[in-house]
Amino acid sequence: MKKITLYATTVITVGLLCYLGLSGYVWYYDKQRSKKSDVQASVVGENNKILGYFREKGCDYCHTPSAELPFYSSFPVAKQLMDYDIQLGYKSFNLEAVRAALIADTPVPQSELNKIEWVMQHQTMPPTRYVALHWAGGVSDKERTDS
Image 1 (cartoon, rainbow, N blue to C red):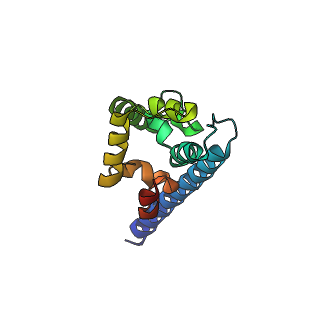
Image 2 (image 1 turned 90 degrees about the vertical axis):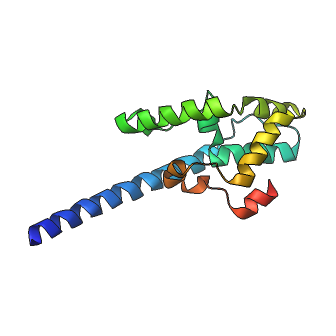
């Protein structure tokens, strides 16, 4: 019985350490990624704030076709999960038109704004599976009202 308890404790501890290690790496990677200066910017400060918000929360991972993915996106289990999420996210909402309008300082199409507003009000994004690893990807109530 002691061996089973020791084995179970070891497995749980190793699993928890792997999860925390991966989550820590993802948090660090996302922070560095959001600080990159090679992001296209608008001449309007408010537009840059929104573009930065999209990048900081990782919206572009699943809602644009050209996002740079982290190294673990090629791992066997992660690849399938991420490919599925990206396909579903891109099919549900393409963020490219919104980004292009913000960069060019032109009005964002009303249909796109309606989708974003609905998602913010109903708190359907980001999905739980995304927030489980991307701890900074969640949207707080304050951020929700500021947006």
